[in-house]
Image (cartoon, rainbow, N blue to C red; front, side, top):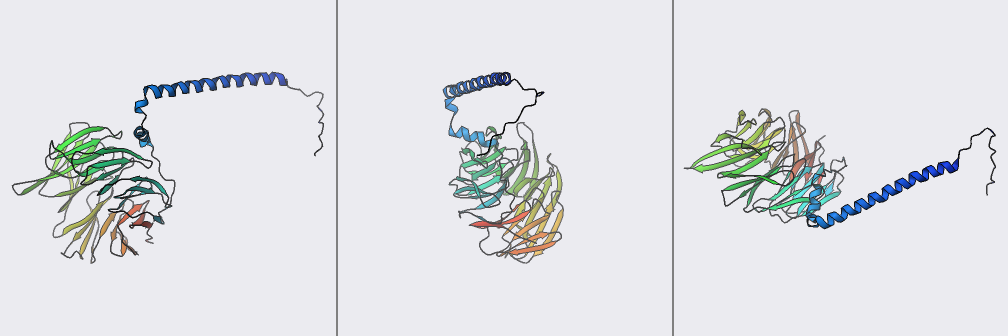
Amino acid sequence: MAEKKNIPIRADAVVPDTAAYNKYYMRVSARYGVAKWITLLLFTVYLLGMLVWGRNSITYENFLYLLRDFNLSSASSGVYSQIAYEEQQNMSFAEYKNTLAVVGSAGVRLYDGSGNALFRDTTSYKTPVLLTGERYMLLYDEGGRDYSVMTTLARVFSGTTDGDILCGAVSDSGNFAIVSRTAEAHYAIDVFDASMKNIERIYRDSYVTGVAFDGAGDTLAVLSAKSENWTLTSEIVFFRIGTEEAKSFSLGDRLPIRCHSMAGGGWAVVCDNAVLVLSGDAKLLAEYPLSMMTLSQFHISDRLIGLVCSENVLGNTNRIIVLNEDGESVIHTTVERKISGIYASDVHDAVYLQYDNSVERVAADGVKSVSFTGNLIQVCEFSGNAVLCFPGGAYAADFR
């Protein structure tokens, strides 16, 4: 045992009044103790009040509703080197808050860049379609009547339509729309705000082929077509949500397929025989005709419009056309192979072409290719990296 040492105190040293200091701190501690018990008492009274007067609102669904504004994302910075998941029917893939969203007839799964499962939700949609915005995921059953809104934490809203669902749209702000058949008119477009409140219903007599929001969710573009006396007439209408304002542009005898809000503020409209770029006030900015060829596949990102046009019946001679957001051609080449898919990059001035056993990255500075084995379903892109998605797993492709 160490020997205790007696340390002498200097004669001129000032010795503090220990008793006085202790009394002071005891008074402060007592005050904090009283404040603590008062706080606990008030909190208990508040909880009891909530349970008595608000017990009908304390439900599991309302608890999930509180999660709608939690914009959590994976902290992983991986590039999806290897992800394993269970195979489903009718699978598709998308990026959502730096995660890989895998959707199929059994439900939705989210995976981070390291392959860790972050979220799963079980559904029984026969033909599931997943749309993602910066805030929510919108999942609906095309041809069915059910739809859901999800975050990275939970399903926060579910709904059922009166008629079959045709299509839908979701904005980065959280507004979303569902198009369905209805008894009042041929088609109804139900518009919801970010709080899941149905704020507007738009009726259309002509067949709705597509809808899309602008980034802010303030404007909804609606494509529609109808046939009268064996003549096809179509149009795009821009509805200003919450107002009576609506501006239309006639597409003539073109069959509209898809519209998309571009990063620069314009709208890309893909038709069967042309691609149009319109302004937000329904003015034509550019037109790219697709004459002497058949549009077989396309994909629109916020920056590019990628098109695959067949030049023969067999589909083994294809023209690859890539347009920028102004409708100008930035890539135009011919491929003597059958193409099973195209994906337009959101980061690079490039598109990814999917073949039976390889994927090509086609850019203005050249073409790079990677080979694969297996049944490739879809090519996606995350943080500038192309990800090859198969029935049972996905991995990042290296185009170096």
